[in-house]
Length: 304
View 1 (cartoon, rainbow, N blue to C red):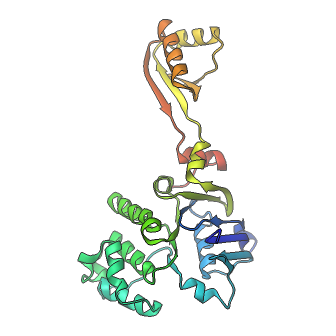
View 2: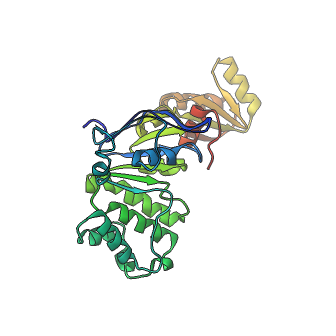
């Protein structure tokens, strides 16, 4: 099986407007696929179409190497867990009782409840009523419910929404561990670029319903060349010596900016500037963030 999820020409139109258009996802088995885009880009609609919660206008969806149809949809979804938008729960019941209901509906083994409670680290709060849970605990309970049945594929829609920094870090750690420890493929959506950067191995970037990038996260970073910033106090002296030597540069405030260069080249530039009174105070290498890359790809500021 080459791809855990593959879509071809997947589109969803509401009236005259496309929420998702001609989407061609390719999600490898065993990866954490970060589905990245601004609010309203079409992330939730795409995940709902994959799960059969929204009917596509056009296009095909393959899961586990087979095209989804009416006859095999239920069988495929038995191997799929999901947490879309916000977790559902019975507030008057405790955490374990909520999971027992889901376990019965899924036909999962009773002993799996202890297993998923351990994975999401809720063993100590399982007897507490869910209405008394913090938002982070409710999110972890929702993840535990999605993990019941030991699915091979997990779809998580904005799982860190509304969490405090500690909760975000904990959820990120849980998701990152799933492929390695539980032989699982995870598709996780987010509009927080820093979250995807720290959690995913592969990434797809969607904007206005269209996929504008898909590939490894490392490959995406390699597209962003770093730049050298040299902070100087005597701008006139610096510009004079650089132009005399025909050195290419740009100015950003009091910083001279040069293209990415080797250490020997950096030493030569600093020596040249210092020798001619430019008064160098700082030398910094700046790598483009995912925010910068997104801005380059879309031509617009990302909505956070």
